[in-house]
Image (cartoon, rainbow, N blue to C red):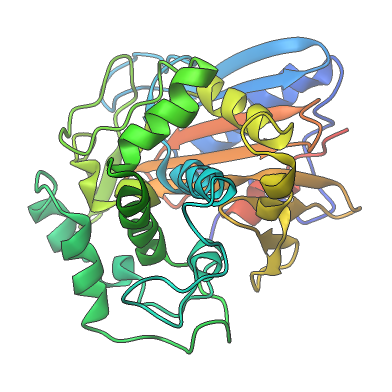
Length: 346
């Protein structure tokens, strides 16, 4: 577990994130992430005072190179919110039925894939360190990933429980392609990235190379950090394969939460939540609701991809937004609940 000095009790925090203290809060958070084991960390904060950026630590072990706060990183499961948004747009167009069965997987519905109640086997449970290192440059097809998960059978009957599930989002990517005739990435580009001008958000299922600038990421192996920055993201695809920046992620969530990406009929759908089993955390359709002690509510998502961790938190009116990326390698990273405890949004 993380050092309790670094990750305080629920009644502890590092100051309000509003007003002139916002930048100070952000810098202290990044410094604590680095002190707790991250190699480097970056963040962008948007509030009533404008936009602030900061970083801490180094971009690469063995160097003094600072982390560029405008740099690229793998956003991991924050990708799911992009995928869910495209699915809901297709629902509004009548091309996908939200509560209709998924072809070949009945009685599982599209909603159950989105809210993690499908009961499908989560394929990432079967990943091993040996396999991660061996297959880092392998190009996976979504059919291979879903078939691999299917060999283990369902974990529970659809709709009877909730368990976080990457397989469901890979299947949603296949569903997008079936409805549009285009790969999920092309639809994300056409429906989200280009309209919002997110030129620094990339779908790269055919390349393991990260764009520059970026911090390097590490996987602990035998007590030593192994550089795992270059990795083919097809192993995650629509469940976690996007590359982005803190600025682009903040812009995306603003558009989603303020209604620019979904019509009135679908805008509230992502915000319909279910308990996750973690106090103060409820899961919607792609997005997550976090409730801090005291009742403050934030929306967003956390994500991880082999050495990269992302946390993105937003007030529903987007008067306050924070996106953080940290690179692992020197110890355990904090849980999302621990990071949320450090924040006190206005």
